[in-house]
Image (cartoon, rainbow, N blue to C red; front, side, top):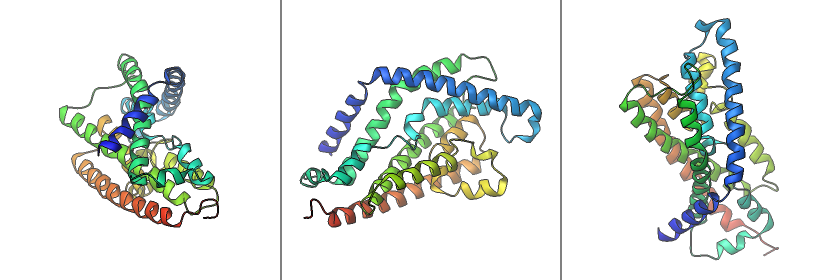
Length: 267
């Protein structure tokens, strides 16, 4: 475990160095969050009863989404991993006495966490002081906050594990670009990153909530904003655990098979 912790620490510290990029990202996320909230406000004013979430809960969902964007954004993949598979530099990693899957997993997790640490607190603090219903509301009670924290961890690990699945599939493709684009588009739509899942038609929503994408940011953000009852929260957490185990297992199998079949410089 020490060697993987070393990989995690090095990547995490390296990610903390990009403060200027984090500041630019903060400005972008504030503007994007405000634009999204005002857009939803226009729809709410036309017919408030037609929406499944109160406007304050929707605004809270959007601010949390922006604060923790780095944890769940589908497009924040490790391009170095794709390059190592395509270019052949993965040969150096195969020579090390480590598991490729474990090393890539901790690297990806550290990279996302370092970006989130630099951005989340300023967004949360500013959003908390905005006037209602445009700002960030407090959770309903302590129990909701605890479940939010637990499901955040689970959702984050599901996201990283799904990225690992994409890296594993890249072993068997000529170019990883197609896989990456399909993955990014699928997650952004089906995980509630473009439109929260409660805004989909009820029949479609029931199907989407069973998919692994809903186990990412959808669950913690909806628990915090109070748009889930007790039964829905229990079901969502169970699905998070099931999908996490299934995706990790599938990713390990793909990476293991890819390592055995990798062809580097014709050898």
